[in-house]
Length: 113
Length: 109
Image (cartoon, rainbow over all chains, first blue to last red; front, side, top):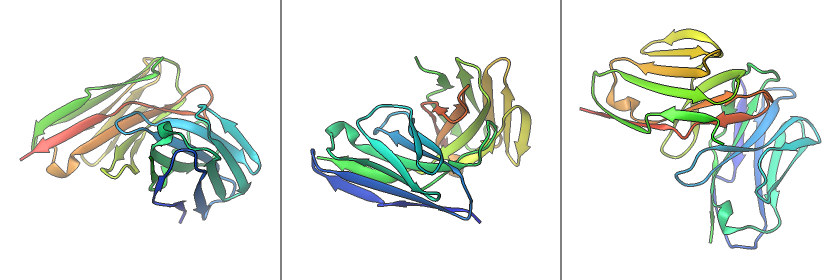
């Protein structure tokens, strides 16, 4: 069975500090991977997607970057956090194709102070 | 602009009543999925329905691609159905998923 693990569960960070959020998928080879963000009370927005190792496409610009260093790992990061980065971050995976369903991790709650 | 319009924003029912949640899309879609968002924020896939009508237990989903709409019907609602339901569609770039803003369902005893 496939499992998706996100870390950390929650973070409290200072404005201007760096950030790294991670996501690992086990039990599925070469999945499509996705990062989503939701501001408190807001709508979920897709940030990035990756269909293969080393390739990441940006969907929404939020002064964040993403990388896929391994087939089963997706990293979201920034060198300098903004207050507006606060919110809930979700990682997801799917098989390749227009009709494949998405499966989500449990998310990371980020508070930037 | 907003590609996914979800309605109603909130819905309060008495236990046993039926709920009808709607999603309308402003662009052509490839497929759509319904999610339940837990209070902590994580998402559970409730229904995956690219097209047509599908039923699972008390849940029925109907997606009409040509009309760019999808609905989720919950029959005989229960208190445990309370929560936020999100619809999401894949657009022409099927690697991008667009979410609605959600329907907050409250089922009262």
